[in-house]
Amino acid sequence: MPNIIANGIQIEHETFGESSSPPLLLIMGLGAQMIFWDEEFCEQLAKRGHYVIRFDNRDIGLSTHFDEAGVPDVMQAVNAWLQGEKVASLYSLDDMAADAVGLLDSLGIEKSHICGASMGGMIAQTVAIRHPSKVLSLISIMSSTGDPELPQAQPEAMEALLTPAPQERQAYIENTLAMMKTIGSPGFPFDEMRMRKLAERTFDRSFHPEGMARQLLAVITHGDRTSSLNSVSVPTLVVHGADDPLVAVEAGRATANAVSGAQLLIVDGMGHDLPPGTWPPIIDAITRLTRQTGA
Image (cartoon, rainbow, N blue to C red; front, top):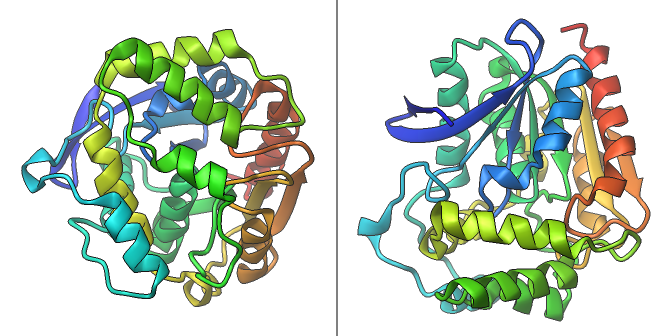
């Protein structure tokens, strides 16, 4: 997979489809490498006429790591945030949005459809807010506005997310399986073999839990984007699972309500993941949206 220097850092990325097709940038979530955008999912989007780009966010995968900054105390930071205290962060979602825009610039792409999942949805929202001239349409999947008044994650889901990743390979794989079963989609079969292979590939490609800790601080320090989302004027699609235990479905509704004219797709049985059973309605909805722009 190629890498490129953009916004002053190295960004690992991969493309699917014809470069002459309308670009669709996929931004993955907290601590998740770009391979969490399943290759078949990307290929299906490419077959629908998109030039699909997936990439590793900063501090994860094969993009630039910021290990010289040290590892923050995540639990202390989360507890402080929940109590309304100020939390410092090495970088922000604004910086991560600038990375995404820098990648597009380095690839010679003037405008793109921007799609993000979870934290990636927050980054995609920030791209649309801060860099509107780069955005053809916005797709926010299982994400949130950052409004602290929205329902919080279910305790078991938050615990699964924040439990430190084991350092040993097999223990890491089993821990990942347990976490995905906890936050995943109760209405769709859990494909353990598929998830096991993804966990194995993730560990072998780049085991780097320190980056996830720094990314989490970027999320919790970014604040409420609701009023800023009012300024987004591009066609927007919000996708959310009806049974998401980590980012409640109310967060998806709030995101759609914040953007004038936004379309909302709530997928019954979907949790905080993208199992293959959810792909048909999501890919259909994304394609309808991107075709709506005429680009």
